[in-house]
Length: 223
Image (cartoon, rainbow, N blue to C red; front, side, top):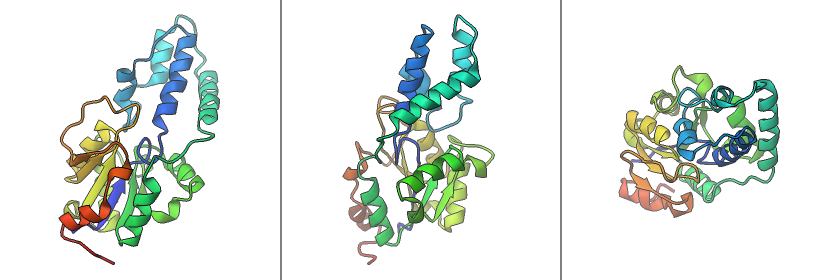
């Protein structure tokens, strides 16, 4: 019986990842450097430990780098790109339908709480989620399963009763590590990456039929 759905945030509900990649790529070019997608994608869904674009820029640039100034410049460019940002297709539909069906909802994100809550509030999504679990709440972020395990404890559900939605291999590994079935919905940055075992792969959340999924999992009409 499906009782809960846990969603990644960055790249899944809102594509914050693709704009960051393009902004960093533009700044790298100013220093004569390339930023291959496969290099950038290492840290998607995780922390900067896998790949730190600031440290990489400072190490490989042929001139001294003021990281404070660079960060300020990057953030300004990023905010400009995000001015007209929209939720990914199907997000509102699945969240509202899940809520109507009595499904508990949570966000499990490797980002900081301030970052996640800022966007959830700006898009009017905060009230739809029963729990928001972020890097501030755990010792290890994805691909470690700690975020998912904590989200399930807070929701009071088991892995068997839960479905996860992710856009990155790191997120998928975290869900798998917690024993949760995972639907992957890659974005522009992650679509060419290799994903380990998953429940389904979608181009967008518009393709996900929640009622059909619930029927297949022993709960045909909870209303």
